[in-house]
Structures are given as C-alpha cells and as structure tokens.
Image (cartoon, rainbow, N blue to C red; front, side):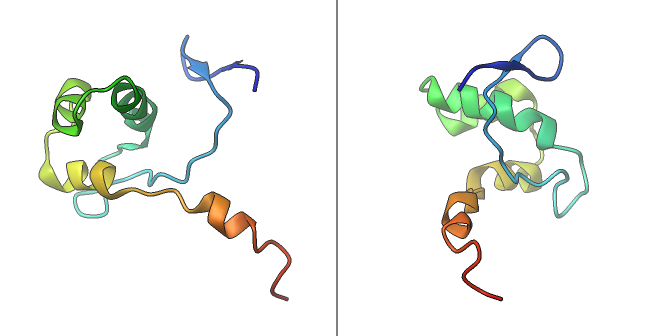
Length: 83
C-alpha cells in the first residue's frame, strides 16, 4: 500500500489498529505511541527496551502494549454473517 502522511512527518502505512486510546487503569493517553512501539518491535528490539525508549514507564500502561492483539481481521471474515 502506498505510504501516506501520518501525524507529523512520519509516514503512515494505512494499516488500521484498534489500540486503546487510554490506559484502562490510569487513564493516560497511550495510543499515539503505538506506531513507534510497533516499529521498534519490528526492527528487533525487545519489548522492555522499546517501551523504555518511547517513554512508557507505568506498569499498567506497559501492560496495554504487551497484551494487545488485533482481532480486526478475524472479525472482518464474519461481516454480514449475523443479522
């Protein structure tokens, strides 16, 4: 897919993620850090180092990154199956 301009000067790949906007426990805004986290993980950094680098320090917020799994593609296969 052609790259589009995302936030700031960073390219956006066009992928859609339903990552939570805020931490469920403390309410801190974390969604804007997900793309940076994903790039660091894809480049081979361990999750601990990636989270330290992007500045996610609270363990409740770290949990949000470590346990997130996108199920959008799995839900999409059932489009129109119910109703």
